[in-house]
Image 1 (cartoon, helix red, strand yellow):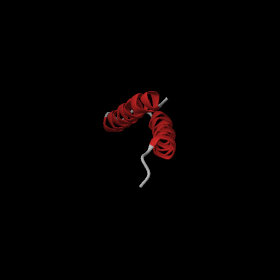
Image 2 (cartoon, helix red, strand yellow; image 1 turned 45 degrees about the horizontal axis):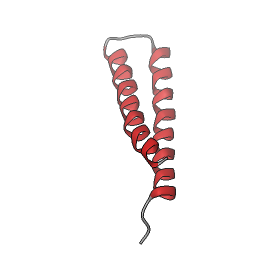
Image 3 (cartoon, one colour; image 1 turned 180 degrees about the horizontal axis):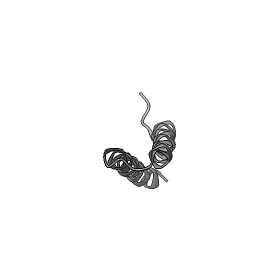
Image 4 (tube, one colour; image 1 turned 90 degrees about the vertical axis):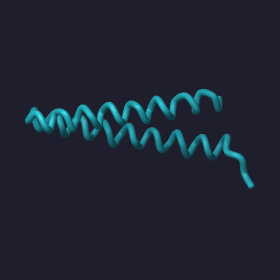
Length: 65
C-alpha cells in the first residue's frame, strides 16, 4: 500500500502542475474566464487530494520517533 501512495503523490503533483499551467496559458492568451475559473477550481481540488495523500501516507506509513 505504501508503494501506491508513493506513486500517487508525484502523479497528483504533476496533475496540479499541468492544470496550473493550463490555467495560466488560458489567462495569458485571453481565453474564456469561465475556463480559467474551472481550471483553478480543479487545481484547488487536486491540491487538496495531494495533501490528503501526503498526510495519510505520513500517518499510516511514516516512521514515528
